Image (tube, rainbow over all chains, first blue to last red; front, top):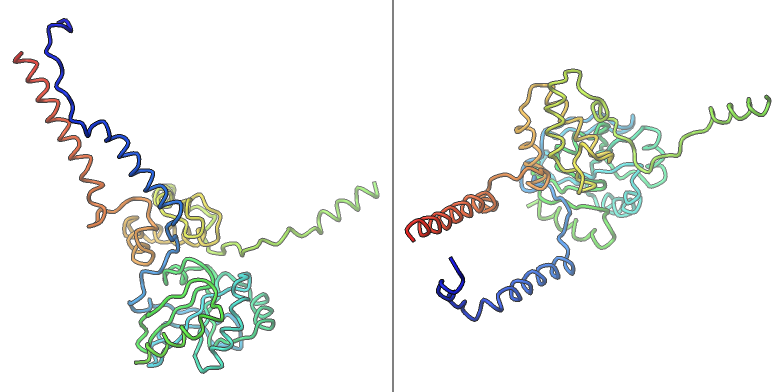
Length: 187
Length: 137
């Protein structure tokens, strides 16, 4: 089989010449979008809109009761704050939690991987806005709530349904938003 | 001799630097299960679960406290006789598909599974055409 004997190969259509460049531009565009607008990697809880999972945590301190999930379904909305004495953003949000407590919000705490002495020192320094504090020493209730870090704050309505999850510290500009969520949860 | 004694006393008294985050206190964060078969099953599952804090790592690789809590969760449930896939589902219910490195077949991901089959089929058809043509020539 020699080259002269075979018929000339059929001519490719004109757009084939530009196809590789076109594909390259599409890929470069995709890369640019990924670079300029990186995807949000915050892991939100898939439980928002669902009932709070059942749990019962022992008291973290002698002067406050522990936290049971049944205590959250008492007809009025609650804030459930996941915090720890070793967590620096938790110090940042302490004044805002204090303001929310002053506004009459009932705030429940879940202290993650903490010791009693550290916790006492933390609350003495930053104020104690909590009605109850449950000790989640091995972090299992944190996992049950779909929480991926500390601090996180859940708005729970009177029936014990999670209506909102706030990830990261509560800054002064978040206080009104959270009060609004709590008001919505009351209706 | 005196200096050596002083030095050894100093070393004995030296406190380790405080970690920035509390170590995981969960019972099975850093302890393997006694049953080797169970531990192997737990290890296989842990290698395919994402650490939520250091998101490029699996919980088997990560030293983050939350990864320790997740390892303990996996081992405790395996020891109780739960199926690995049930534990994966439990975590997906809470954290979404992102927590698992093993892609699940869903309405969003089915093209990932279908595409190789389609490509293999196309390749087969193309090759068959080519080979039959050559045979007839």
